[in-house]
Amino acid sequence: MYIIIGLGKVGQLLTKYLADEGHDVVVIDTNPQKVDSVVNIYDVMGICGNGANFDILQSAEVERADAVISVTTSDELNILAGLIAHKEGAKSVIARVRNPDYSSQQSYIREELGFDMIVNPEQAAADEITRMIMFPPAAKVDTFVKGKVELIELKIDKKVKLHDVILSQLSKVTKANVLICAVCRQEEVYIPDGSFVLKKGDHIFVTGLHKDLTRFCLDTGFMSAKIKNVSIVGGSKITYYLIKQLAVLGIKTKVIENNHQRCIDLSQKMPYSVVIEGDGSDKDVLLEEGVQLSDAIVTLTGMDEQNIILGLMAKTLGVKKAIAKVNHISASNFIDQLDVDNIVDPKSIVASQIIGYLRSKFSLDEKSSVVTLHKVVNEQVEALEFVVNENTKNLGKPLSEIQMKKNILIGGILRDYKLIIPKGQDTLEVGDRVIIIAYNIILNKLNDIFKDGYYE
Image (cartoon, rainbow, N blue to C red; front, side, top):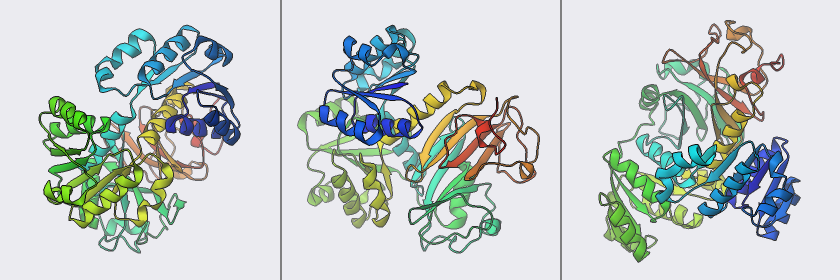
């Protein structure tokens, strides 16, 4: 049983994921309308009240909880709720802590206060934006095996040499050691085999090492120039984390923010970035500050629509890459029809991190449980990392002889620091790191991929 405290966007998304997986869920929020709405939609138990109140947690039977996940807008309330939950016997405690002032204390909160996981949507969003900036052609970049393997999303347009290419003939276009492991075509999702034919407009999801993905992009026409300077509209917490990361990479940043005090705070904390006080939604301000000369723009205001429109405006001014933050997943569904290159949804990123942790924490076979989990293809597909161990079925057997469940694909095998793009003669061996692509199926451990049942 899972207890979720706080029914903002993260809390509601977690409720959806956990309810869809068949778990018992109790939600707590001070807003009765939110509680009623979530209870009616997802058929979970709801309690109206303060999640950091001892009596409220008692009524939720906190002592029985496999995990208490506190994701309210208040860091302090999340920490207090976690402390009470830990003291009362919850098996696992997860809290959202967003304030940069607490970022240096995360290890203390985990190790000394008994928290199992601290999540920070703003930090996670900054990490993702940084990966997008480092790999300009990609609409999305996810990593596995501590960053050694990447999964990137690319859109096939008229400039790219992949229209009408059959996947079995991909080697005629590029010799890069990569695998196209999922395709999204007009909202339809495919886990492709060798006979699949790529078309203009397809979104393809490609796994490989960074160097091989770079070569793939060069060979097929995706590659664009390196990004050296970035304009950021909005001085949010994401901005704070992002300009720190970009400064380390030697990328220059300029921030446009209309709040006077926030400009002062950012300029004091981030002396290596130019901070401009002004209305970033005003085209004249953007032109005056030379946004058109930027290699990329990142729009981080509090409004999804404004972020998208600003990204579009910047593209018309000649900016090469536009990245927009959105807080509503539904807003991402029509992005493909526009000219915004990337969208970032902090809530979705963190919800995926938490789901991956819970799958790993409560797997019956901890040795082969989930190491990393990313939700891709509009949240419809999961890309997961597992470690092969002595309990894994079909060890040493050629993949061509193994029966796997429908809509499952092995996206890569990392062995001795070398990535194997799986073919029929390849095998699974103890110690391998395996990337699995799964559509419409929940995986808790590696043996779940096999058609002949689960490991017992």
